Each structure stands twice: as C-alpha cells, then as structure tokens.
Image (tube, rainbow, N blue to C red; front, side, top):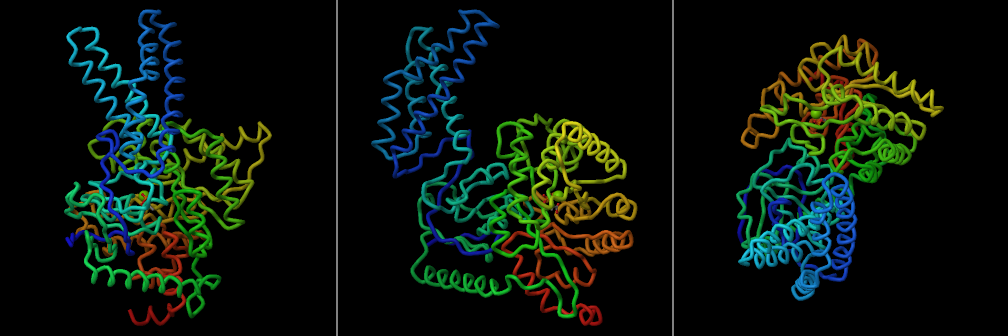
Length: 547
Ligand code: PEP
Ligand code: MG
C-alpha cells in the first residue's frame, strides 16, 4: 500500500479504480472497454460526420480556390473509406478491447509513418493527410460525446490538473473522485467537486503513470489522503468511515421540510448553488428553499460555440419549471480567469483575474449579453426567475445594464413575446462594490456576496494560485467587516442580502452570519441540511451577548 498526502478540497470517501487522465489534445488515453460494438458505432458515426465536413470544405474550396486545390478534400474522403485504415481501426478495438479514440490515433500514426518513409516525395506528403483525417475523426469523437470519455466504470480520476471546462464535460456518473497534483481549494474545479458531492484532493504528489493507473484506490477527501492498493485493515477502516458518513447524511435528512429558523425566531433562506439543470435534483433532494446561484457560464463552457437564444431559453425554462415556484437566481455569464471558452477568442492577459471577465465581457460585447437576457426574460414565464450580475464595480455599469435590459424588454414587447417582472440583483465580490454598496443598494432588488472573489481581491491573492492556499483566509477580519458593512447598507436601503461564495457553507462561521442578520445563504446542495441544523440550534441573541 502507498499513501499520498494532499489538500482535501471536498469531503467524503471514494473507493474504486484509479484512472490517470492526461489532457485532451496532448495524448490519447488507451482505455479498456467492455462494449466494443458501441465503439465501432461511434466510429461509424464519426466517419459520417467527417464526410459531411469534408463535403462542405470541398464545395467551399472549389468555389474559392478552384478544382485542383479542392481535390485535397476528395483525397481525405478516400482515406476515410480506405480499407487498410478501416480494418486497422476495427482490429485494434476488437483485439485489444480498447476505446475507438485510441484505435484511430494508433492507426493514423502507423499509416502516416509508412507514407513518411517512402522515397517518392508525393507519397511522403500523404503522411500529413492521414494525420489530418485521423485528427478530424478524433475531434469529432471528442465533441460528439459532449463529455470527456474516461472509462465505462466509475473511477477515481488522477490528473495533473483539471480545468473547469474539462470537469463539467466529464460523465458525472463515471466519476468517483478527483485527485490532482496541482489545484487549489478555491478553484472552480474544487467548487464543482463540492457541488457534485464527490471527494476531491488537490496538490498530491502522485506519480501519474502505470504505478497507479488501474490500481485500486481510496480517497479520503476530508483528510486529504489517497491510499493506492490499500491493505485489508485500511479498506475496513475506510468502509466504516464511509458508512458513518452515510449515516450522518441520513440523520440530516430528518431536517427536510423543517424551517431554517434559529431558536429565537430569526429566519434565513437556505438556497442551493448549481451549475446545470441536473443539479436541481440534488438541490430538491436536500430541501433547498430556492437557487441562490446558477452559474450559467458552465452552459457556455460545455459547448464548442455560443449557445443560441433558443438553447438557453430551453435550459432556463426547464430550470424554472423544476423549481416549482421557488426563486431561482440565474447569474449572467461569468467567463474569464479560470473559466475559459476558446470560441470567445479572448486575448491572453497578464492578470486574467483582473482582466476581461464577467460583466465586462457582457458590456463590451452586448450581442452576447442580449442573447442571454432575451432567453432569461422569455423563460421568466415559467417560474420565479431572478437575474444576478457578476463582478460589479460601479453605478455606471448598473446604468448600462439597465439600458440593455430595457432594450431587450422593448424588443420582446414589440415581437409580442410575454415576460415576467424579474428581480434584479448584483454580486458584491469586489472591494469597490462593498464601499459603494450604499449607493448600489438603491439601484437593485438584492445583493449576493461572492466571498470567493471578494477574498481574492481584498487579500490580493490569486484564488487559483496553488501555493497561496495557506494565505487565502476567507475568515480574515477585513472580509468579515466588508460583509457586515454590505449587510447594513442593504438593510438600510430595504433590500435583502445573501452570501453565495463558499463561505456561505462554512459551519464555523454560520453563527457570525446570523449575528450580522444575513438574509440568505446559498451553497452546494449537500451542505444545506448541515447548515440548517446549526441555524436551528442557534440562539442569536445569546450568541451576540457572549461575543
Ligand atoms: C464568488 O466569487 O464568491 C462566487 C460565488 O462566484 P464564482 O466562484 O463563480 O466566481
Ligand atoms: Mg465570483
């Protein structure tokens, strides 16, 4: 048995096989599969799509460049149908019981090498065509499944690091845990792990090779430990811990349907943070009273191109309907920093956390913003949607947002499309917003404090920087004083205020938030009942007196 130590970023015990994941594009993983027929069907479908793409390219080249140049795409079509190419792919899948990506990659490499070794310069150049065709197929296979294929059984994923865009594309039913050699507890991948309620450990010095790949592993997300090939005693101990956790969760289920009210009568709204419509199931299971933060950027990150108004409308409509009349706060696009979308074509930045992100992108590219707003307003007929804007720093931004919202509403009205009266809120996650919260409160219906970014900007610590976790202190007095100030200013203006950063789920500080009279706490669904328990056991007046 080997034991590796890291930083636990999401609690729980996971037991299963370890699968080393290498970034897509860099290398194709060889994965064992049981259903080889399914792989061959994926191959057939990918070929069909490749042929369709090549037809389009041929037509375009014919028009723009003439027949001679367009012929290259005909040659690619021929490679797609080449008997040697096809037989080789099929033989690899069937004889080795492996995934289709690996078979296409290996075949492309092998045939390209044969061409490259030929004396004839024309034939030599065909090596690049074969590579091109296999890359086209691999891209289609990656995109076609919409999800990154890891394994056909649930596994513990070990990787150097996982970008949020990769994490959300993983087939969640196949992921038992994430273990990364880099990563920080405030990154969006860690947040996603907590939202998915799976154990995760970051900054583990794991060898990402055959010495762990395919081996049995146990992840203790709370202790930050990974056991590879655990001995019998450890297995028993961890099974027991897992059962105890399960038991604890079962006990907490008794709090379903109970009020989130302190023993001296202070009511708090306990809401869920979600990243997709599917997450609403966990929110409902854990008795969320509403959704306090729907991170819509994940919708954009899952796609290869901008989601259309109709696609977004369907998602927001479904989410609103699933919440059955409870409030669902949908945050507009918060792309930037670690949440990247290649098709946005953003320039590289020296300081992405201080750069072009969130509302700044929306105001600079209003056509993207308007599409999302139209979808949100249209969906407002199907439930209680509220809109929230991220990364606000000035009144000027709010005024600009209001102008765009008015334009969208006027257009919908002119088109005869009905919409509801949506509450408008902003995230308070920059010190600038904190210090003008008095003025901001007069402009909006509610505030939600984003403590993840607020801590980052207050303490001047990049939340992605893996080495600075020990300095990233969300309990820092400066952060707590800012929260208190925002709550006071909100209440003076007569609006409600919540917390949707990770601090909202921190049981060590719940009483403090109750003392500040925070109106709402929004968190990963699995944390809700634990926080409800603390709320119900607290007497705020007594707590304040003891302080
Ligand atoms: C925050 O910054 O606290 C927040 C909730 O937003 P995100 O983590 O998505 O930046
Ligand atoms: Mg934020």
